[in-house]
Image (cartoon, rainbow, N blue to C red; front, side, top):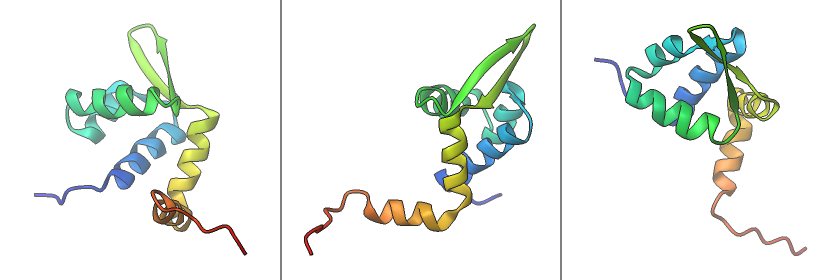
Length: 97
């Protein structure tokens, strides 16, 4: 049995598949494992936050990165930047001298 993937690893895997070539709904579902996870990740997160966009060609649904998605993908690929952002999230910064 494979180990559970971290959300950042799963997001990186999805965005990589989309960035390399427009990914189909089927390709993304294979990465996620089932259609419920597809809805959760793709429809409720990536599309809702405008990181990817959907296009239809006949019966095939494809997904591609938006400019915002490209930026997010770059941040995920550079783990150091992402770790810094996560360390800052939820913390108050003392900006005084």
